[in-house]
Amino acid sequence: MALVVAETAQIALGYTGVLAVHVPLGVAIVGTAVWFAWWAVRARPPARPRTPAP
Image (cartoon, rainbow, N blue to C red; front, side, top):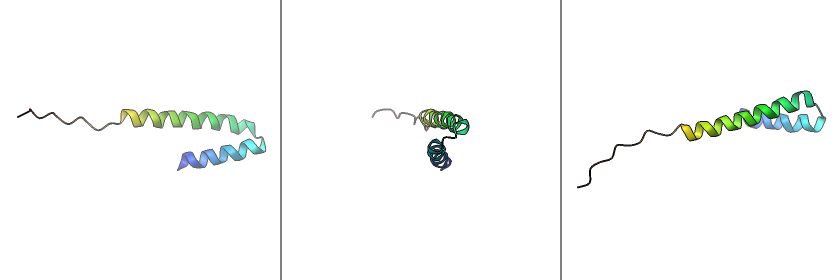
């Protein structure tokens, strides 16, 4: 939810031309998105133990 709010603010700041906030916010958004992607790949459930075949 916070990422959606940040992206909305990013659009508004880009249209108004406030680059002093627009650029760092864009970097923060990209960094957060990369972190979420890394977390989604790394946070896997533990593997279930294999049962022997009958």
